[in-house]
Amino acid sequence: MIEQQEIIFKALSDKNRIRIIKMLQKKPLCVCEIRAVLKLAVSTVSQHLSILREAGLITDWKEGKWINYKINPEPDQPVSNALLFVQLQLEDDETVKKDRKIIETVDRIILCCK
Amino acid sequence: MIEQQEIIFKALSDKNRIRIIKMLQKKPLCVCEIRAVLKLAVSTVSQHLSILREAGLITDWKEGKWINYKINPEPDQPVSNALLFVQLQLEDDETVKKDRKIIETVDRIILCCK
DNA sequence: ACTATGTTTCGGTAAATAACGAAACGAAAT
DNA sequence: ATTTCGTTTCGTTATTTACCGAAACATAGT
Image 1 (tube, each protein chain N blue to C red):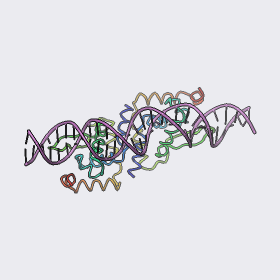
Image 2: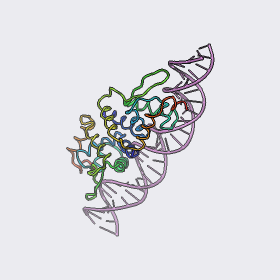
Image 3: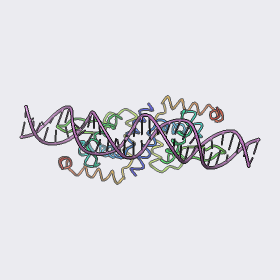
Image 4: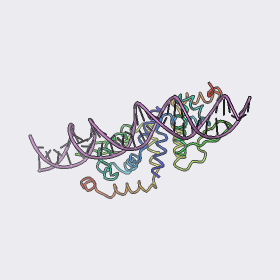
């Protein structure tokens, strides 16, 4: 139990993973969209996403050749609390606002296939 | 700002540091009391405490030859939110309950000078 | 069947982390 | 002044982490 909390905090203890959660709380995204925002290698983003998934914070589903990621809609209690907590934090953060602007205004095709 | 949140989560992303916070939310403690509960080297506990202090989660004050640690009574907003969050989590966790039982029932002198 | 494209897995590297014991530090008591 | 005792700092080690590019995998379209 305390181990689960540790895993949740570890998942959230990285700047890039916090940014991912804050983006996904606006809308679901695929790996390459996130990559375009964070400016990391695709494999690195994939790794971050799997850490968030293992912690129970996010889930994914297939859509054509894309795999979309979204906030876990059925989290267990500690995860649910953590997600709510993150949702209330950093709403005024400049990085978060900038990230969200990008994903809201730019199209997936343009973002991924530059 | 997002960096501060990262530091806070990092501070909380270790099982032993979570246990420390949960203990301090019951009452202030010195290094050797915490050491006795966590069963870690004194230097390790000191290191954990300094990570929590740097994050703004705890503060310390001198009392004779002891240095006592307590939850930061004047945290800034993100820290305050995190502390409240932790306070609401893990109340039923067995490890947390056991830790608190020890620090509430056993005397500092006995605990430290075994 | 082949190609293109999005994603994951693998192998490797550099940096960060958690742990320890020994040495240094500081305050209280002898 | 010296010793004692709680604590911090230092130096070291083993493990974990974040990152990358290349290779493997999967699926859609030609």
